[in-house]
Amino acid sequence: MRSEELGVRQQATGNGQRTELEVKDSKLNAQHSYLHSRPRRLRKSEVMRKLVRETVLHPSQFIAPIFIHEKREVEIPISSMPGIYQFSLDRALKYIENMQAKEIKSFIVFGIPERKDSKATSAWDERGIIQRANKKIKECFSDILLINDTCLCEYMSHGHCGVIQDSDVLNDPTLEILQKIAISQAASGADIIAPSGMMDGMVAAIRSALDENKFQDVAIMSYAVKYASSFYGPFREAAESTPEFGDRKTYQMDPPNKKEAIREALLDEKEGADFLMVKPAIPYLDIISAVKEKINLPLVAYNVSGEYSMVKAAAQNGWLDEDKVILEMLTSIKRAGADVIISYFAGDVSRITNDIR
Image 1 (cartoon, rainbow, N blue to C red):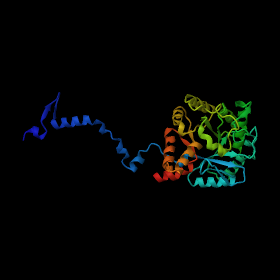
Image 2 (spheres, rainbow, N blue to C red):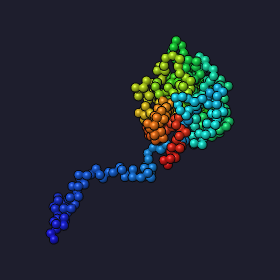
Image 3 (cartoon, helix red, strand yellow):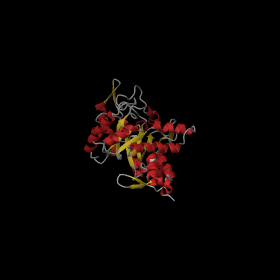
């Protein structure tokens, strides 16, 4: 049989010989060279997908918000946030116990006082709701991380985050009140102070006050990049902090701005913050990513009330698979660069992630 019929006829090449079969294979490979890279190999099975998974959620990286009030009711449901409540102190303790069983060990507490005034005096009252809650929580739980929201809006009669004069929020007089609140919260047991009012210099002022009062070990989690967002509506019901007039656009950030977010984050890092936060999360994933590239501190993202309520409403109407959407949403926040996530879904994380482990 002739050699060409066997497909092995030799062809001369510059410095050597190749068979006709090799020539044919070479042409075929050239035509389909992209098939040498097959990313689907790494998606072949669930075991393979888990092996190469880049972003992993764990309950230890989540902070659960708690709303504690001074009223007599054991728990008051938040109509715009299904499953979320204002708790009395005794009920809040039971909630923390239940969350610990779900592997959640970190909590941010928002106080809702019965008495409000124009100076937020109940915010630093040693008998205030936050102060009493801190002491009782620490008495009952030795192994949790207790964070206090350090702001004035829940305690001010007008609902704004600072001292008001002629309808304007005054920055520097507000800093003095924030210092009093921070000292009071630290003295009653807070592990982390979390100023959220977006006042210029708030981190430096609080750090100075804490250090001068021998609370050097109390950390600061700054709401460094907090936008004037429309996603806060349900929270204002939960915290009873809707402004009586105007809005918060003169101190919270303008949503179109990105460079300003970097500037705010770097300023708070320089002033002595231990954590930096971006709020909200989902509409600002690009901001989370941009800030993460510039800072050297743990980055927190707040998955806010509006983000929670949208998922709940859609799920209740049967439009979305709630658990799958929660997992995808929280993963996107982590993937964007958040080290820690504050979320009303924190209690769901252990159950959902256990289902896919």
